[in-house]
Image (cartoon, rainbow over all chains, first blue to last red; front, top):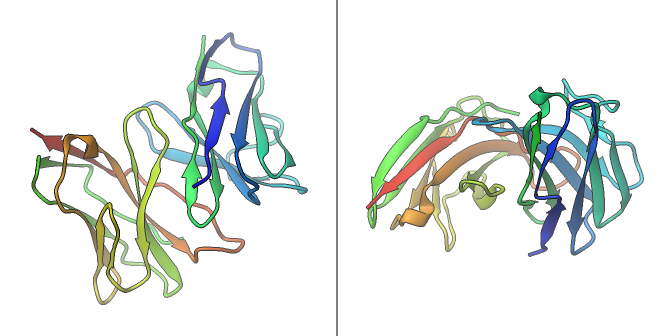
Length: 111
Length: 113
C-alpha cells in the first residue's frame, strides 16, 4: 500500500499566526481528505481535495480559515489561518486508493 | 450516510476473542459497513468492510446480520497491541463521488493482560 507522510509532525504556535501542514503520498491519488481531531474526540472531516479543482468544505469549515492546495496527484497542503487556542488539534490527511489510508497526523498546539 | 451506534468502551482478556458490536438500523441498500481502528497517537487504520456477506481477512472477521441493521467485528485472539478505538462507519459504495468517511465516537477496546 502507498505511504503517506505529513510535515510537521507537531508544532507549537502563537495565536494569530498561520501554519501550513504538508501531506505527501508516494503514489498518485485522485482524492485526498483533511480531518481534524480535537483532544479526546473523534475525527471530523474538514474538506475533500481533488487535484485540479477547488476543495469541497464540510459544514462548519471555510476556505478562509483552512485554505487547501492540491497542486498535483501526490501532494496537498492545509493551512490553519489566524490560529486561536481552539485550533489546537491533530490534523490528519488521508487518501483513497482501494481503501482509505491516513497519515500519522500533525499535532498542533496554539498558545 | 446512515448513523452508527457503538458502546463507548469494552474490555477483553488477552488471547480471547473480542466481539465489537455496531448498530446501523437506518443503513441503505447501497451502503457498506466499514471498520477502522485508531491506536493511540496514530492515524486510523483500515480493518475490514462488507456489504451483506460475512467477511474475513488476516486481521478480523465481520459478521453482518441478515437485515443488515447491525454488525459485529471479531478479533479472534486479542493482544495488547489491539488496544485502540474501533470505529464502525457506513458509507455509500467503495468508489465514486461519495467517498467521505464520517467517523462516530467509536468503541475504546482495552485488552487486559
